[in-house]
Image (cartoon, rainbow, N blue to C red; front, side):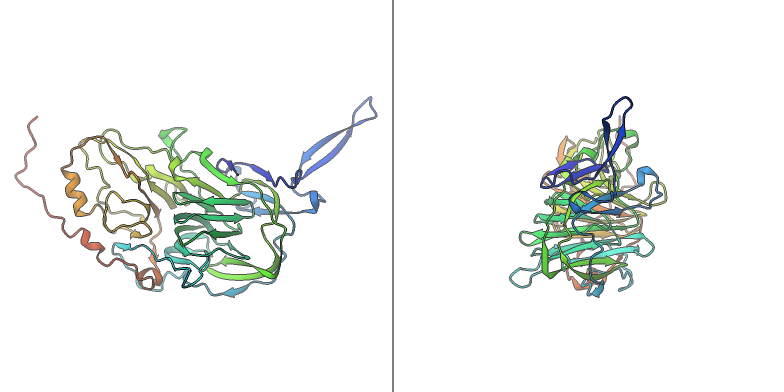
Length: 457
């Protein structure tokens, strides 16, 4: 079960414990009567919580942020999260924030589908299967991003993950994932996304060999893009975002429950003897949430020319510079193409932004060969990119009729104002870099005709 809305003030309590959200009773004696009138006041932190619960606030913003940007939720839990043994450093595997492992590479990069380990060979859960591909910035100064892939085959058992550095935007590509959070449960399938915001503890169950992408942002939260002249409706509508309802387990783990904390780019672990998913009720506007990409209301050109891909922005994490994002999450969904007198695929481009693309399913319109589901590409700042030779030749002479574009396909882009560095794992260790990528543009030939004359009217 879910509640709908984006950034709403939600409240939820597990139906097994009705009345677990605190209410304070205040009695006032009315004039000319001996019977006092009782008023019920909702409060956050009563002296004694219902059911003997602990009150705990989770802050996603500074206390003094303006109201539109102020994020916090109150959790009513069986035991507070502070009850744990000390954190100790644990191996990070292929998760990193070291952007200087290898020399910079300005070339167009494309990765073949990232390999998912076979469960018969090695059990790998979500945390062990995290691999950092590229990124920039610094979690310590709360300014930057990282892009990861996850490849796993087994569920997390008696352990959860907590990101103290930033928000995770998770894009499943192969296999659904069941995410248990302190706020409740979310089932997230390919063609859906979810966001787990900074500090929220979660565990991931999988149901086979599983793969996906993660965009991590430091120092900002995702929000809906401003619509401007589009108006009040369009793109990703707030009502289509879903957050979980309260669910708890009162479970003692005698052998120890492990909480893994990503802090300043490193991993740390602590032990406790109970499940962290012991929140009986909660209220607030700082929650995890999910979204089905099929619900995106596409805006597109209906006359001529190719609109910029910013019209496909689902979520944005804004920087301090107006109109410039730390990161945008952009999709290329099925839609109608009707532009007249126009080369309809994406144009050739050099960009002051970095563009990391992934493919959930289908075939991307500008490169129908080579760019595969579960793979990726990176076009760095000012690195030229655009349609391959086959796409250009075909679409330069195509009869322009209304047509469905990207039917059965869902490609996406993580676009950032940061100049991203690729990790050693991304360039070398994963052994998935397609070294022949540049060859898709090699057949492009000159069509220049110095004697060209415009057609007579």
